[in-house]
Picture (cartoon, one colour):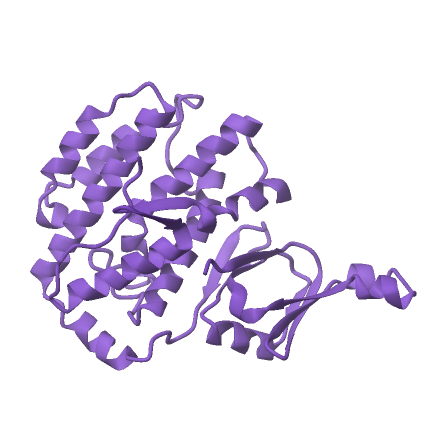
Length: 310
């Protein structure tokens, strides 16, 4: 079942009663004296149906009981900074009944296996980037497909970087001087927001599969708590790029990420994804990917179930 994504961008009080997330909106309850009108300011949602929550206002209060129940149901909680951009991510410490065994299996993975898994990751990422170029630009991207086929174990020739340079130079034709930079000009703002949502979805799936999101197969920055999430999300990034290109086509230049734009970006977990012959929402596909990753860690068929865009 696809889990729901909830966004809160106004003053809100969140609590928990009888396995329900109680959402109270003070702006409505305080502005009305009639009980029937006040009741409209309080709604509930089953906690078991929630997969992701984004808290995007400084006057949001959430009780410890609500946080505890959300994490028990493997919900990812994203908090935003004073610029109303994703800043923090809260995940449960465990999400699988055989956690200890899986941790040991992950820690025991040999470096050659990690390099083979990274090779697959880069190949799928470049192929999906090539699809985006072919779909949304005039580039045929045959060179991208050649590079994908030439990626070696561990990507020792760094074809990922070569493909990325070509990709970012051509993907946003309406921005001929575009440079992919987290602090750069739009549409970097849209990409940052979308990637933050994607990272939370992938990190949640990793925890559900009983793995440690800190221990990557390629990323290894000692300050990064989500190295494995940053690895596994790479082939999924073009789905965010696709959403951004669609937004630019629909709205034109976007300097400010309005609530309307945020609403569209928050649909990323429900985007249609195909792995093999199976289609599913991105959030479910992510769990399939991380489940297959664990199978690779224990020596079963060493192929990660990544999506391929078509």
